[in-house]
Amino acid sequence: MTDSIMPGKCGKYIDMLSCYADGELTGQAKVDLESHLDQCASCRALLSVYQTIGAAAEEAAAEPPEALKDSVMNQIKSLSDDGGRQTGKMKKTAIRRVVVSFVAAAACLGLAFLAVPRLFGFGHGTGSTMSAAENKYTVAASTPAGSEETSSKYKAAGDGAKSSEASSGMTEQKPDGFAAATASAPSTSAGAPALAKIQTPQSSAAPVSGTPEGPAAETTAAAADGSTDDTVPRTLQAARTTYSQELKTYYAVITMSGPLPDILNSFTQTKAEDGTVRIEIPVETAKTLIGDGYTTQVGNENAAKALVIQTGD
Amino acid sequence: MTAAEELAVIERVKGGDTDAFEALVLDNQKKVYNLALKMTGNDNDALDISQEAFIRAYTGLKGFRVESRFSVWLYRLTYNLCIDFLRKKQREPVSPLTYTDEEGENADMEIPDMRYEPGSEAEKRELMKDVEKGIDELAPKHREILLMREVTGMSYEEIARTLSLSEGTVKSRLSRARRSLVSILGRSGTFLNSKRHIGCKEVGERD
Image 1 (cartoon, chains in turn orange, blue):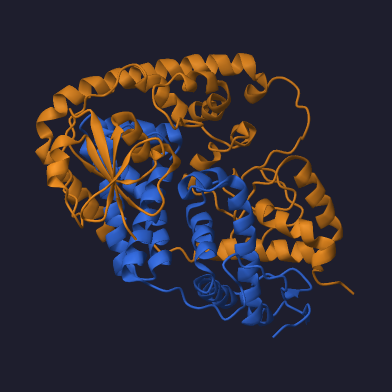
Image 2 (image 1 turned 180 degrees about the horizontal axis):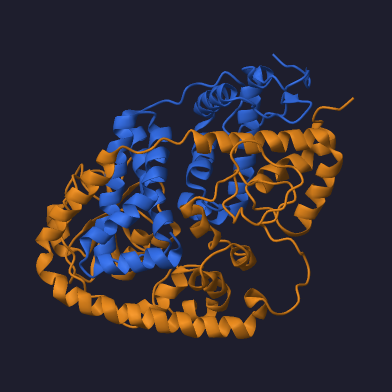
């Protein structure tokens, strides 16, 4: 008679199951869990439930209405008409950057080949032989890693073909570059995870803080070539509050509610009359925040400082 | 879209080719829309938020360098918009019928003895409905992180950056979210619906 899950006995494995189902369990932990799964039907059952939930969520995903794309493109077109005159200038800078990034990418592929021949099919593998992509207990339904290569002992229920276009892109974000190498990706992108490992010294030379991991390192090589002078068109944003005065004097106005991110700690915070907290920051810090996704209104591109406004909550 | 392809499109857009942005919209709209839909529960709001997210991404693209993966950045924009929206609407989460607290410690789970697989289409649809309802009943932190993971497929590292958490927290919170969800589903009898299910053993029923 099979036992149900007994928190005492299976406790530590239960916590690993979620991680495993996401394809994020690696190394010895993964080996341990898989051998536990060999012996424990209850944990296998729970894993199966997790995988099924993932598959259900995936299948229940709604198609966005056609109106979304149309509306977005229409609004964008009317935005760009304002800045249309700048096209010529931007094209030139863009071409130069693209060329540089190809050269950089080619150079890195060469480096990658020297340093990690294994990625190109040479060299011996050592250590853990199964990459994250090759879970013994398959997770084809729910893992973003290349699902084509998985060999499985216990297949997940539901539609296993989650090899959506977007997920092959996600593969490259994995710190474990080997997952992407085994997936059937075109040769240029196979180089990207290699770049993730090799380029670290290079990316630290980049002028911006909050430096990227992974494929974004490619742009760093390109962007480091020269900062962009693209003119910023005014945002049409239907903002709840506009800071029109501030937008004239500051490079950008970044609004946020809730706790301030750590990088703002070293700057002076001023309480304003309207109850908001205001922080002046350098442009570089602003770019980091923008890269992190904070709400931004674009201001005066020639200004030396940007403004963070924290609204109370 | 691979990261390299994304970058190529972004370069074209920055170079003045506005139409090129459409590729980014098409590639990401399903996840953006579903994230907004699951978080707000309303398709009109989801549509508004999705539009706003893309517009902000576009305007942010032109003038500033994108530091991280465009799609990850975009999901973060979407997520923040949803949070703002919910805060303004002062929407209280549906108070869960289970006894999960904020961190959702919930040891008991009713798990079928054997592997659970919905067989027919009808069973699958039932399961989907149950899962959606169950997710709604989760504590907010659990709901958000589970949605983030299931809808966008981001890695733990990306989620950690998006939500400003450590990877360890992402890992444990997801685990708790799932356990909590399984518990909710078990209570609502989801696992009893499957024809393949034989004899559910309950672990220490609590009231």
